[in-house]
Length: 298
Image (cartoon, rainbow, N blue to C red):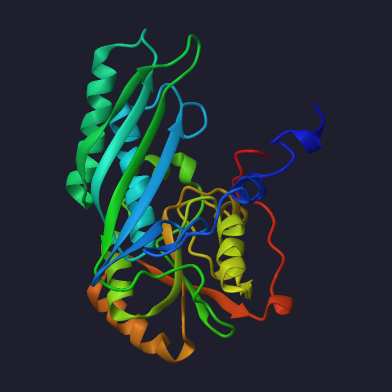
């Protein structure tokens, strides 16, 4: 098989674009389709969010991980995408493929971790499916759900030339444990949507070097990042902050005239959540070139 005929040489974004070309454009009441953190359906004075995410043993967690933490991560990943739109989880369904040779206690711990994440950050388990993994295969966990926005959702497409770029929390070095223990920024995302500060927003799951270009593409802008100002997690490097992924922090843009108001009110309302200005939105031709980040097909 040649590289051109396989997925390995294509990359995730190119593969998804090729597959979606076969589908018709979305239409009302769906107002946001593929390309953002969640799909959005208009529901009167609120907006319903749709999201699905999957975790594969050996790719998103190792066999020897503590299963309570794996369950937490499976739910928190979906909650993080709802947060990136300014919403929160409502109903969740879970599909799992389980090897039959592992002890029952593992599955009990997995579901206890999922329940803990739902209790902490929203969502109710209302269904799903279980099946046995093929011989020699590992665990696969797929979580789908609905969320709700009570303020207009913040999309990836709203940033404009001159807007300022911010991230919450810290970046880099997630494999040291953060990727299994993070708390999705649900309250912060809802606050940004309600206050109207964020012109565009997404969560950082594949690394800043991969996710920022996605926001730029949707907004038709460029971006410049001051790498020396990146908020680094303990012992992380600037390179790791750009490329590691699995940070699950919010990346968003803000009009420059709102900078002072944002920073002062944020410090008052979220004193324990760092907020850092990392760059500026530009014209597409003036933006930096970004390479790297996590891609499952590269």
